Structures are given as structure tokens and as C-alpha cells.
Amino acid sequence: MEDTENLHYGTFMNDHPLPALRNQLLSLHKLLMNAERAAYEKEGNVIESPMQFLQLLMESERFAWLRQLSQLVVMMDEAMEEKPPISKERMDALVGEARHLLMGSEEPGSFEVRYAKARGREAAVAAAHAEISKSFE
Image (cartoon, rainbow, N blue to C red; front, top):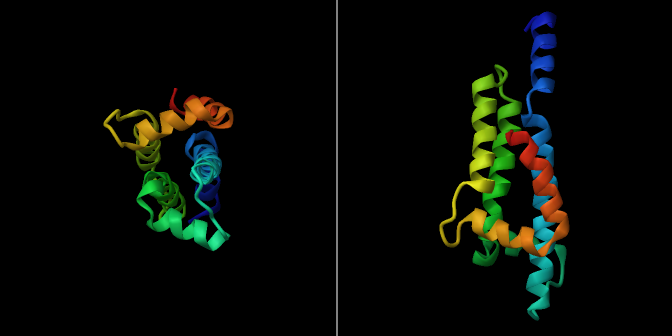
């Protein structure tokens, strides 16, 4: 790729909400993991090590809803590192997927329903959501 194309691509990436949204989603993911861990432990469950918590995150049905957010962040990472560079349409689609995940479904057990409960319980999650919502305007 020529230098002018790299410069254009860099400007394009900086002007698009996807890179900032990816970082916000990663921070949100950490907040949600910590909140869910606290709720799990408050119920009398003991998490003895970071490895045990990681295993719960990856395998327990209780934490399965968080994996949807994990997968979206990974998809964003992979897309932003694609060669040739990600298109504006693909970036827009990923932003749309984030919007749908966070706000799009009220089906019982869906990510959005579990996420809404977490927003109601945790002020930090609600604040992060308010910031993220700006990317969807």
C-alpha cells in the first residue's frame, strides 16, 4: 500500500467510531465480568483463583451471555487488522452488531436483558453504557 493510501486509511479509521467503540466495549466487558463475579460470590459461591474464574467464564452457563460481548470484541480486533484494510461498510456493520447486541433484543435470557439488569445494579455499567450509546447516534 502506498504511503498516501496508508495516510487516508489512518484518517478514515480515526474518523470512524469503531476503534473507540471497541475500546469502550472491552472496558464494559471487564466491568460486567467483575459485576457478575461479585454477584456469583455474593450468592455463596467461592472463586479460588483467576484460572477458576476464567474457566467459569468460558464454560459455565451462568456466564455464557458475556461470551457474546467477548466474541464481538474479537471480531472487531480481527476486522481492524485485516489485509486489505477493513471497509467503511464493514466498520458500519460491526457498529450495528454492537448496537443490536446492547440494545436490540428483549427476548428472555438474551444478552440485552441480562445487560439491562447489570446496568440497573451497577452505576459504573450504566455510565459506560451512556458513553457507548453516543457511538450509535
